[in-house]
Length: 343
Image (cartoon, rainbow, N blue to C red; front, top):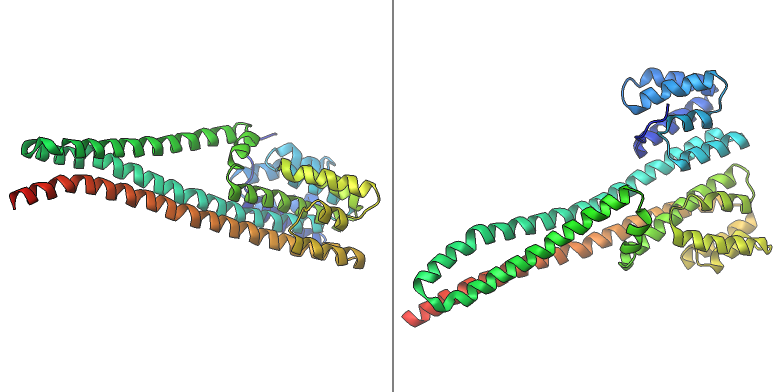
C-alpha cells in the first residue's frame, strides 16, 4: 500500500544500516525484513516493513517491495535497484546509511540557519509592536500636554516603527509564500529566487554536487562503467545548474575522455578537489578519492551555512539596535529641549 508520508533521513539511515548488517551475516532479505518488523512496533516504518515482508514472500525484489510502500525517496530506491542488479546490495545499504546520515546533518544545519533569523525577525516584530502599542502613546500623551513642538519627533518615531514593522511583516510573508511553493511542487521557482543571494547559490550547488558524487561513487563501487554511472547519477542531483555541468561532462566522455578530465574541464569541483581525480583515475583509486570528496563537500556545505548564519546574525541585530536607538533619540530630543529651556 502506497503511503503519502515519507520516512525521514534518520529512519532511512537506520533501516539501511540494519539491512546491511543482516545481509553481511548471511540473513536473506525476506528474513531481514521480518526481523526488523519484530523490532519496530509503531510508526510508518513498522507498517511498511509488514507490507515489504509480504511482498518479499511473494517473490518480489527488495526494490519492488520498497517502491510499493511509498515511504522511500527516489535516490534510495534507485540505489537499491542498482545494488540488486550488480550483486552489491550490502555495500549499497551501507552507502545509503552513511548518505542519509550525512543528509540529516546537512539538513539540520540548514534548518538552524533558517531558525535563527526567523527568531530574530519575530523578536524585532514583537519589540516594534510593544513600542507602537505602549511606549509611543505614553510619550505622546506626555509631550502633547507639555509642548506642541515635540509632535514632529513623535510622528518620526511612529513612521520609523511602522516602516520597519511593514518591512519585517513583508519578509515573513515572502518566507511563508516561498515555503508554501516549495512544498507544493514549485521548488525550482523558489531556488531560482534564492540563487540571487550568492552564498545561498553556492550552498545549493554544493548540495547538488554532494548528491551527485555520492551516487556516482556508489555506482562505480557497484561495478558500473563511468559513463553509465554518470548518466544514472545525473538524475539524482536535484540541481539544474549541476546537472547542466554533468551533461557537458557526459559529452566530453562520449569523445573518449575520462571523468577526471571532464570534471576538471567543466569545473564541477573546486580546482584543488578536481586535481585529486586525475591521479586517482590513473591508479584505479577513483572510489577512494570520491569518498574523500564526499566528506570535503559535506564540510564545505557546513562551513557555507555557518558563514550565512554569521552574516545574517549581525545584520538583523544591527537593524534591531539601530531602529531602537533612533526611536529613543526621537523620544529623548524633545525632553532634552524642554530641560534646556527650563534651565
